[in-house]
Image 1: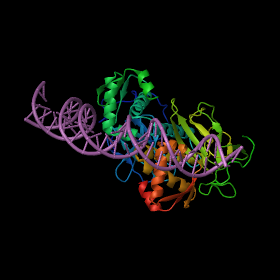
Image 2: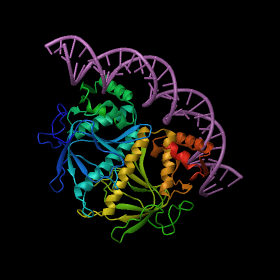
Image 3: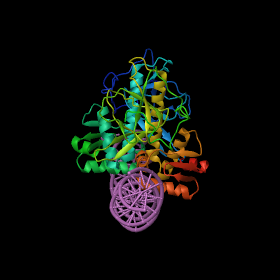
Image 4: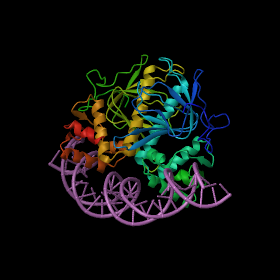
Length: 218
Length: 218
DNA sequence: CGACTGATTGACTATACTCAACTGCGGTGG
DNA sequence: CCACCGCAGTTGAGTATAGTCAATCAGTCG
């Protein structure tokens, strides 16, 4: 889990040859920073743990989520290469974070009090806007609209190409969209039947009709 | 709309004699700052408008929301005295903001680039945590659980007293919780029938059984 | 005191959930 | 290289929760 390998990433690179995002601007605080590999499914931090380190995804994908006592789970965000997570309002983590696929993370030391990098602040504001926009999806959109919004978001974050890599399982997608896996699966099938997308593999999609998909996501 | 009056606030003060929040720490950037009154229902800013000003609620209540093209609305957050809103990741507002009741706002000038006050950063992180927690409510909780969570949140933000002021309408509550007004109303009635709360007026509630309410919100 | 608006209650419906069976992809071993 | 196995995903049938439409009630403001 601490040794660097490429295992688990074959077939799912969402970054260019330098491990940089194709979309997001690379983030850089003062060097040096440590890079750590996390195996698929491994925990990055847990709710209640002491916070401090900030993480930037180099390659792979991360889910950040919260649990109810009976096990219901809400994934509040996925993080792809170039994106930052792990900041908290106080000294404690309020969420869980796990690697989805094999993931390399840059570990950035806690910001110095009174010296907040502009880029870190911007990243936080982008996360806030993203979360607030997702509230609209969860609160007011139907199952089809949610899945359409998810696919468009994933596509946009990967450069807007036809081919979309989907590193997470149907369970993860359901827990992100506030749906069951069965509903997610049914919607994928319906979009496929309508010729809006194709599903070359379980972990990828091709968007064939952008306009139709955008119309669905409202 | 620009002249200071007290109209519309009678009966709903959620702050102490100094107009300070009973719960939140007061926020203060470098003085001076302008105070402006907004009448009930009046617009503070609109989606697409140029952003820049940051707002702190002195008294009253604010709703920040987003609309779908067909009119469906999601309120992403309510802001009560002492709380800050209006910051955006770029130069443009992505949401609408309106005064719910008569509201006094401190208008704080845009932060200087490269000079982000610690308190502003903390406030942003608190908003992010709050939004992410609300995702769990919208994505994974039932109608009763959502209303219970709302009541507890409102109570906590007002000092945890038995008496809770509810400055917003049932429509607002529904659009915040991702429910219809009918469902909100039915849940209020059910909580009342169970003796968990009483409803002295339409704009207030008394929490009689905290444990029961907390258990419902999970 | 009356009218208007917001809230409540009721009857019925629809969307997504639950439970269950089946399919197929991907990985492993012969 | 192919066959088997296991699990993630799909599909189906029936159900439940919240939504829709409609009527009534209540609180507020002229």
